Length: 474
Ligand SMILES: [Ca+2]
Ligand SMILES: [Ca+2]
Ligand SMILES: [Ca+2]
Ligand SMILES: [Ca+2]
Image (tube, rainbow, N blue to C red; front, side, top):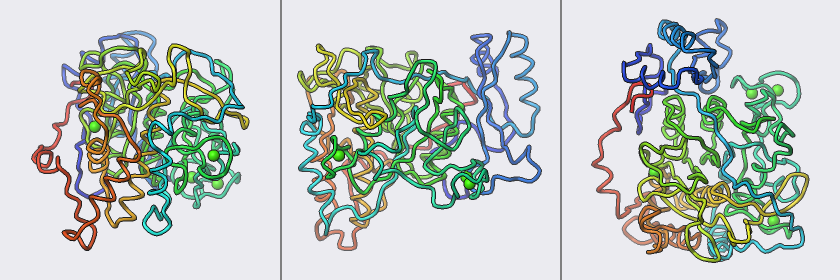
């Protein structure tokens, strides 16, 4: 890790030899043949130390034949000097409901934008004098994004230090030809959606549009971050229906190293993984906000009903877990997971759940349509986080992920009906967020700008550092 002071402690010490506690071993052994996530320092293996730019940690998935192999492997990994961590490998799925997409090319009505008061908020975000000046980078960790979509292409991020299609890792970050992101599942530079075992991959393109489809181009709809934004596309599904946590962890580290300011993960799976937690901590410590979907099981999240990565948001300031409400009822959707502790904010994920009416956004091959789920809710918050970061910076304030989470929550609207399901019953309003930033960064007590007192700051500053658990021992 870099030498700057860590805000969050890693669940295990990077670079030190792993010590598996008995409890951790029991936990890892509990499902005898389940695969392992192994964090390896690639530069430790590679004498030439070819990764010079960014983290040299890579997570690998090790599949196990039987209990004995798992036991032997764990012992071997303990002895391996290049192994920096071992955890459970989790299989993640996309958090959209099973409802088939509704193709609705004539309906340009994105009702969620009115619900969030996005048009009014955009007037503040994109004010030429006082609004956002610099692009904010959003990383979409998903099943790829249609880079050529007419309503997305203007907002796609480009890696300026990589030369396209020359088969060389020009910027020495360990990834060849990563121009707009990377496909970690298929190990190729092109992060466009791939057709796979479960058909066309449409999820990531829809998610990307909800966060950052282009505002003001008279095409389709627009994201909660419609301008002053760039999308880094990190494909972790490739041709598969599920994604192993190893690819997700590598994507998280990539996003943090390449300058993403917020990461969207509309995916998840049951269980805990210390290697995934370590990747999350790596990104948070680099100043990256993380937004996750709470999942679609209609269940109450808890320490025993734990979903990765979303449930880690409860532990970490700067990581935000998002639940889904229905625009037509203003209530939690039936499918959305909930918990006033583990689900921290709500936004629309359906327009009319009883009619399977989802949110309107971009789909691959230049199309538009509706999908529903907490997958659709999370990117609305991700876009809002990006705009908050951009506006705070334009107001001469350097926000930390913790500050961003605090202002997002403190500016949200309280819906009393949600108090038992969402932390403090909070529902995002893009307009309230924009107004809160303008008022908090205005005024005479902070003429130079960077003072940013928030109501909760004094309480939270007293919190000690998070104690590091051993491997998957909670
Ligand atoms: Ca590269
Ligand atoms: Ca290249
Ligand atoms: Ca548009
Ligand atoms: Ca949090």
